[in-house]
Length: 585
Image (tube, rainbow, N blue to C red):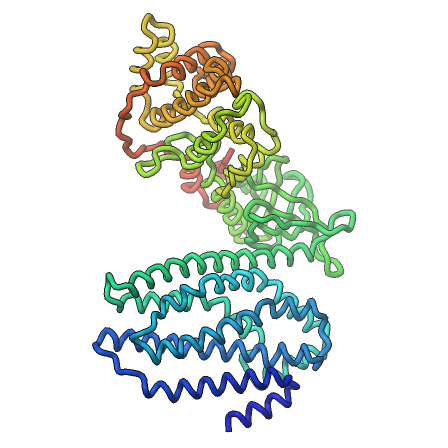
């Protein structure tokens, strides 16, 4: 009866003979394994009973999943290929992405799971999936394309009445609908991970299957993390593209907002003021993790781009009601902008949203931040500084290292990326760019690596009768974090100096370009000679000045950061009291 129903359905959907044969083969395979299940050996103990039950649950889940995949293939893909409704090839490929490949993979996987269930005590379910880990990476491609697929689906549905009618007729037969069916693969890796974690708890520890299952769960966890990240990025890119479609420039051109690390956050309506006395102008606002875009109200379906406000290194200040009601001011790298809400509630909500965005950027900031706020007992040296020095250890023979300047544009761009908490591939950067980053970070420390409080101690030691001994004593008086990082830096500089015949950077040359960045008085000329002379002695006499065993690092107790102070002061102002500025610069 089932085979007859399949044949009738195949005819109505205009399936090819090969498609019908494939469906019939699948149905016969399922019937065969249903029969064989009764012959499966009984488990030998309670743990095996539970484990076999979990495998059965996974098998049932896989059957349902394969049925959904075949519903996509047979109900939608094949009829469209056969011309039931005319659809352009790129639309078909975009909507259904890797469904064919996923369908083939899981058809074979289902057969192996059926065999594993029948031969429960002889087959490793973990190994079955380990052998297919490479094939399962196809889900990363599927997820990356998912937002595009949904966009194409909705666009084609609006464009073609015939296509829309076809989808409606298919949904009468399968109420789940194409959107729901296409969403199923997004969760499959996570479902596997959950199922195998349940099995892992029932497998005897120390057994081969236990080790295999642990390895499988780890690999699936990494794959799921990537899939989830890709899905988030895909959804986010769809949001950004949606905003781009609404906007045109003042010249009528399209506006590009796409950037790999840009995240859409919110949108709404505010008012912009040229100054506190000027007439307000209504604007649409689009908030991203690094940018606030202002646009004029919609006209004929489009909005003219008015302004883009960079939020990195910005500050947000609440304005008192007697100056401008329900308003706040954003001071940024390109000037300042005054915004207000229609009501106090609107103003409070948008002030908080923008402030949180700026605070997140501040929390990842690593340049112009005190050293003690970048370290703790687990990370006694800032991670990115450690990574920079490690990267430069392969560049000790580079001519003019630290003396030759890298591209200032690239250095600034990488600095901004690091300040936003983004991963930077240092191995792809020019040696002089990486060394320039290190010098810039040292130069921008609010309190130098050799702190202002220790400046006189070091300069006096340098000019004493026994400078090496005096400098060794001075090093021990540094705060633990400063002492550890200074030792690491100077040790690296000695390696550079040891290659001076090749790189032309003797200790004296290194001291001239590095010294003023690590040792300076509050009012010193940046080229003050004492800094260079002291740094040269630190490099030349490294082994004598720096003890092998450094002081034990204890967790620093930093002063409240600017971020902390800001978080203590985020409520919108009411009345005529003066504002508490929320400065991030």
